[in-house]
Amino acid sequence: MHGFLPFLTIAVLAGTPTSAPGAHAGAAAAVDALLRDYDGDVPGASVLVLHDGQAVVRRGHGLSDLEQGIEAGPRTNYRLASITKQFTAAAILLLAEDGLLSIDDPVRRWLPELPAATEAVTLRQLLSHTSGLVDYEDHIADGFEGQLHDADVLSILAGQDRTYFPPGSGYRYSNSGYALLALVVERASGMDFARFLGARIFRPLGMADTVAHREGQDTVAHRAWGYSRIDGRWIRTDQSQTSAVLGDGGIYSSIDDLARWDAALYDDRLLRPDSLALMFAPATATDEPGVPHYGFGWRLDGDSNWHSGESIGFRNVILRWPRERLTVIVLTNRDDPEPYALAQAIARLFRPGQAP
Image 1 (cartoon, rainbow, N blue to C red):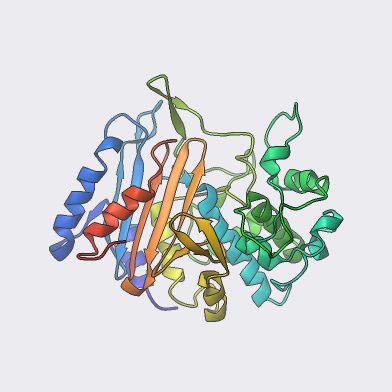
Image 2: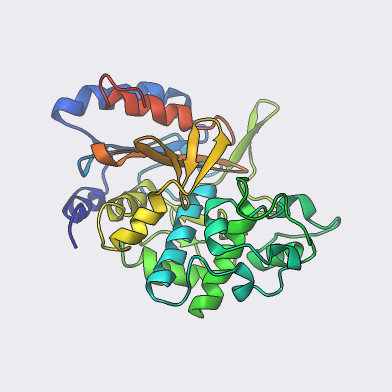
């Protein structure tokens, strides 16, 4: 165990909002100006800037719960949405390290319910969005009530005997693939997905408040509720029909816990170096603006790696420059705006003379 744990024990667990002394003080103050639209009695944001293992900015703005008037802070837990995908990818890599699966396994080895059209699809292709699987969101049965779960995604895809393109021949971002990966984790490990994440990732890293949330089975501590602006008013819009699918977006976490996750990406406390190299290798080229390549659960752009998370009521981003030991995390409990541009603007304050 090495790297950033001393900082995480001393600074993050202290539980107080942090601004950097010394060289970063001016930049930290400028962050507040960038976050002014999140201040007051409005859905808020929690913001973390890590540099060389130090939290140079760590604070909340606005409210995590409008109805109760609860302020957002460093321990506020937001629905991460697609930032979840990096944890799903890590779970698959841990099982590969255990020898329980190979990332080149055909997905039908683990999920034989899938149709013949997916015969050639591998776990590697699910991780890198090159499977060509159809989008489950487009095939929810008319009249379906309640919320979908990962097993429902499998049932939907079992009835779609086609792919958008021959597996491995193209790139198409796929929530379907990551929902299936959560089910693969369950079948390979013999544990349900949420329990596996807790046992193998969250608890070992000290992410005590992070959870793959299952309504009625667990509690989200310090929970942020999601909101949308409708007719000029903020209305609670916390859950959609797909919000209970775990593998593609169901984790709740805070900037404090994500600091621990970020630290684990620099050393071998969770994943072996070869697994981390796979996670951040350019597995496939993409046609998404600002995303030359995708790894396993990460968008890759030159020296930076990042991912956004968008679902009803939440917009989030994690943006990292590993060579500079710089990370910016912005978690928000509102539908708009998408905070990637904000995170880039914050990063520029700590990267003099460099464009993110």
